[in-house]
Image (cartoon, rainbow over all chains, first blue to last red; front, side, top):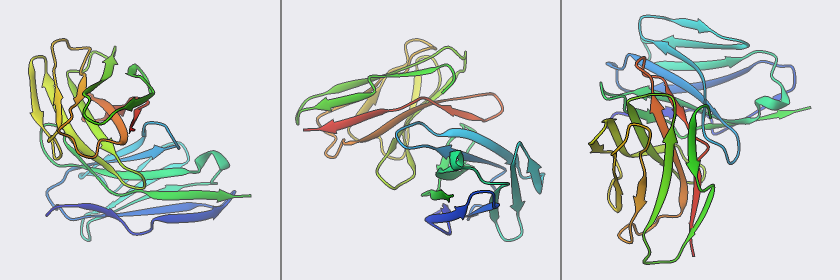
Amino acid sequence: GESVGLHLPTLSVQEGDNSIINCAYSNSASDYFIWYKQESGKGPQFIIDIRSNMDKRQGQRVTVLLNKTVKHLSLQIAATQPGDSAVYFCAELTDSWGKLQFGAGTQVVVTP
Amino acid sequence: DGGITQSPKYLFRKEGQNVTLSCEQNLNHDAMYWYRQDPGQGLRLIYYSQIVNDFQKGDIAEGYSVSREKKESFPLTVTSAQKNPTAFYLCATRTSGNEQFFGPGTRLTVL
């Protein structure tokens, strides 16, 4: 079936370095993707989104890249900070009712 | 978390009991969603509602029920038919641009 998945379950990064979180999707018809950050015991927090008519979108310290050819999505976090430690999910819009398909998530651990 | 409120934060249930989780929003969004999250896993859709008095089953609706009598409220009932209800439950709303925003969640534990 159609699915969204992440390559790495855990990513350790040193404070100040850049982080890259990857996500693969299988539905080539998907046209909207979202990245969420979830801290322990809290609800997911919207980070950034991208539509399929774009290859790149930048926010504050974050950049999302979309490669439709290989159906790959990535989230780049610049100058990673301790507060960036969390689980990051990518989500794919699967229908016109707003139904999102979530990946399993990547745990990002920022070390001093 | 914005204008989405979930209560209670923690909920304990005995086996065989029904419990209702509350979700309220003041964002004036039409669409609302309920997700379940198990440890170390992503979110799975239970039910969703696009408009008042209408709702649809998600991927794992068995053992759950919902109502949507008011735009602001979308309560989820976990019935005794749900065999493994211990999980973190998340409510979300959606903007017209498809952005979904989540509430703080309710952690349900079956004793």
